[in-house]
Length: 279
Image (cartoon, rainbow, N blue to C red):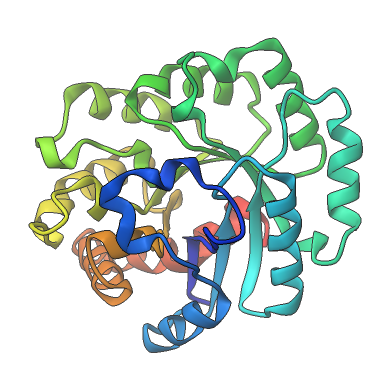
């Protein structure tokens, strides 16, 4: 099974997405749903996808579970919950028991938008993560270089848990990269319970001036750090449309991974996501 392990649905006419207010995001400030994604999956040989949270909203998580329940190609949901909620166990039980609840595979919070770079290490957040892992869910790190030390400490604090690093921690590709990102990615990868999504890279490059060759050093570094068993492909559709079409993104990442060996490509496009999220 070929899996796109990172895509989104949203409708700005029905909900507020604060991160979408920037003028340069106008091209994607419209509704995107399963009917828009289905032909793209078919055209690009993708069998299934995982839909990932876009806003801090339980209502969105519940909506995504309903969509997954009605859409066979959506095999997993990475949703949002309030990690600081003292009643989080009850919330997770309710989500798991709702229509589509069996497809809840992970939780995510937009940590890189928090003022505190050590937000993940707060006592109430760590308590919430304990509840997430007690429900056999993975946790997606949405962080940049600034928050990677806290992510490393968190992965070390929960050695039996499963973590997935989104977008390879958003390397500063447009600026040519940074030693801070490279070193901290390497440190995170020493935690054997962390997988790394090769996703969202084109939108970290110059949107109208990128290709597979420019992405390759960042993919290669992630591959060197995490190895062939812990890299995961994700399109980051429809955010990726800012930089290229679904097909262009998939082809570029596939080319990068293929240069690193057939096993690297094959595992990243399915097997590794299955293990990370217990699909």
